[in-house]
Image 1 (cartoon, rainbow, N blue to C red):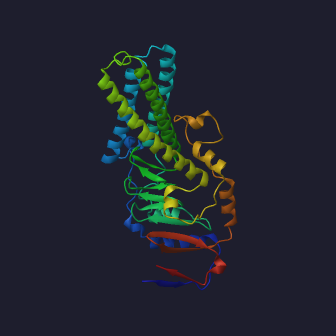
Image 2 (image 1 turned 135 degrees about the horizontal axis):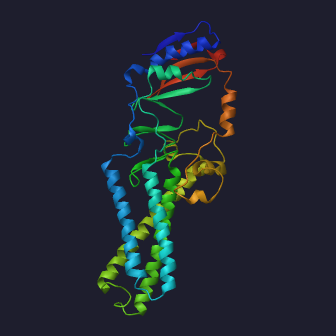
Image 3 (image 1 turned 60 degrees about the vertical axis):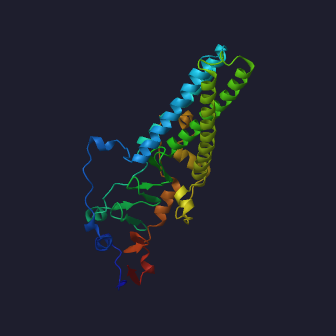
Length: 342
């Protein structure tokens, strides 16, 4: 039931504002939140213990190794053209290595998880909220929820700029690992295309030559292996190409998949496409953009700094419930006559 809290007059000094924060912290029910657990050395490695995700990850690696086996032992080694085999072998193996490295980084990189269980009264009071700030609490993982963060039911955490949870990498795609997921889809699409081209060339070669001489395996076995690789390559080429295009579009429009699906009105100032790409891939364009071994860096853009400076005229603090998310909000003092709390 709604309670009406009427403020007869508002003092603008900092000590009064912090007392308001302490008072409104009760509306977030911080007593229901347990303090964050002490992390040990094993907790520093990010890995989601989800059976479906682990199975999908294993299948992904198996399919890449299957393609590697067919390309090397069925098509390249039996070829009489040494230059053709060497060049295509080097290209395919580099792309496969980069794809698996990107997959591994996307899987073990913290996507931007919010500290779990930090919505305690002591932590809320220690924030010393600046005027104009809004603090959300996730009721599922009991954490202070940053803007544009969403809760993942599989990871059981709130993830910053969460795009979606991908079982193929057994992880969420979020602020910190989106680059690795984009590289994974790109390299898988490239090796799929490369494998399809080599399968087509090898079929033509075998039709012109004796089937017993174009492969180390029997003709029926060779045909089955090539058809399976062709089916795998075509399926993954379509799937990863679509995912790659979707991810690049999300980055360039500064809108995650969840935000687009929920048709959320942007509460943030969108950056330009080029600036968004630089933020996602770790700075100005360089060969590091294509490397899964380079880190992703995030810098506060000038618009965020300007937005914080423009909010300095906001003075009072209130607590309320927005949908299923509890929130502490700071607003303009001159606009406050009464505050309704849920």
